[in-house]
Length: 185
Image: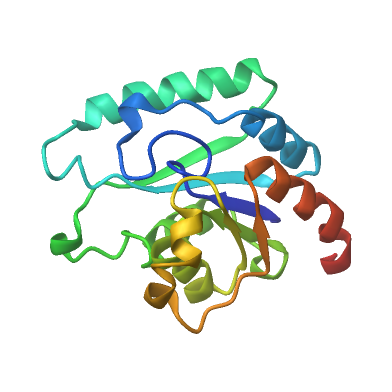
């Protein structure tokens, strides 16, 4: 299945190094999600939420905010948004924390993802672009969140990995996918 995997904070909205509890969608993100849904893409959010393991927020806080976001998406005509969350910190040594591919594996078990026709959109090179590279997905870096820093002072953290596209924001990334998806089937 054609899928767009995406990071949450810094990509779709919120504070890129914050947590989900104060998350608000950036302008035009819901419009971009709707555009991708209308193009028959499965929409999968993959998010690291290490503040859960650090007891800064609880699983209940995460689930409550996730429910609010899904409701807001549904009110905007988006009914196929999925969330996959890693609640661990780096020291936990899990396989689900991006750039590891455990969240992809979990989503892939539910519905088989066609890697050749799928994308990853994110703002953090060292997590999102490496994650996409490890799977073989097409990579779109957005300049929102820490995207600019990922390209400049933190480029060394994902050295040797090239993006397929660099977008100003999520909406531009969605338009690019729509315009370029016919090239890949």
